[in-house]
Amino acid sequence: MAYLIAIVGIIVTLGLGYLLSTDRQGIKFKSIIIMLVSNFFTAWFMFTTTIGKKIIDFFTLAFDKLIEFGTAGVNFVFGGIETTGFVFMFNVLLIIVFFSTLLAIFNYTKILPYTIKLVGGALAKLTGLPKIESFNAVNSIFFGTSEALLAIKTQLDNLDKNRLYVVSASAMNSVAASIIASYMALLPPKYVLAALPLNMFSALIISSLVMPVNVPKDEDVIEIKDGAYGDSFFEAMVDGALDGLKIAGNVAGILIAFIATMGLANYLVAELAGLFGYDTNLQMLIGYLLSPFAFLMGIPASEIVQAGSIMGTKLILNEFVAILDFNTMIPDLTEKTIGIISVFLISFANFSTVGQISGTLKALSAKQAKVASGFSVRLLIGATLTSMLSATIAGLFI
Figure 1 (cartoon, one colour):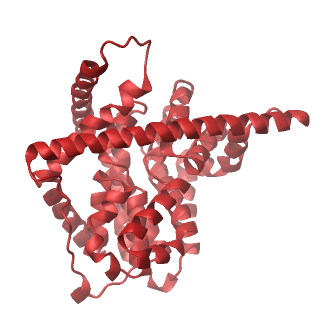
Figure 2: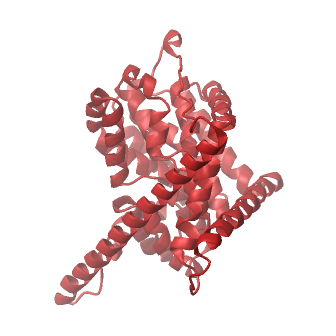
Figure 3: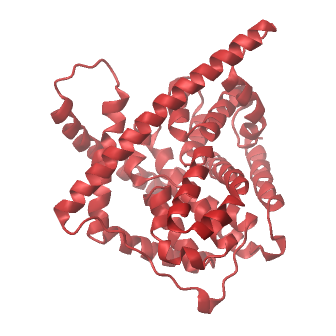
């Protein structure tokens, strides 16, 4: 029965994307079917095959070892500070500095740009999508929202509205490689890793439904800015470390503000509800509102309100706040719910990211920023449908 509900959930998700479409006649259903099959195959391969599980285990061990090295650096600087238990700043945020440095090194040595171009070209051939959209989808796996758009800045002005929507959607449904380790410290690593390729395909599927692209072959060219750090290896390391420190600081500030604000909102709603004899808060109300969607994603009925509240927290605030809330619930939830919600959480699909995309485009192209403002609501809804699609497909094989 759970599988049937999940299949219905996938159909509903795709149907909502179709209803949201601005050009239903232009939808390339062949490409969408190819990407959907690719997503099913990816989830099946990673969660059920011996080779897939070994690959996940390999990358999990690799990340664990890298986290150990990052922790050694943190301990050298802050080792004299006595702490009790898990400290988010030391165990999560400051590890971002090391991973940002590694990313800068891979970028400077051209290993990452060439890999992205190679995989992006293969994706274009597989799906039939244009090269820029395919490259950006792969690039977005490794870089944050702003950095992903920055890589194609020389061609932004050449993109029509539909193509701009697709690249923005890929950027929004990505996560920065520099903070993947932070997610893995709070969620089961296998679901964090699985979400990366699943979101790549899902973002292209949903955006191709909402705003399908059609590019003549003679116009399907790509010029990519490598975005290498610094003029030397050591300068790249320094730049990467400073970027990582900036990211960690930004995340810390946002978490302080958002968690405090959510606590205030929960308190006010609880006090107001108490006046009428009800025991509830804002997150519980959001949970009830989104519980039907959680049910369609394949989550057991007894856990859909909890799942819905986490989904709403991510949408309204951000994924880090939601992950911290969800982390406390994990011991009391089934493995299926843990897997589905974990995959759902691994993206930047929330209100604040829409603003970030607008700000980035404004800095790169005022003309395209104005265009993007016209589809901001569609972008947020499409990004949420993307997270739902990835999570539902993953749940079929958990």
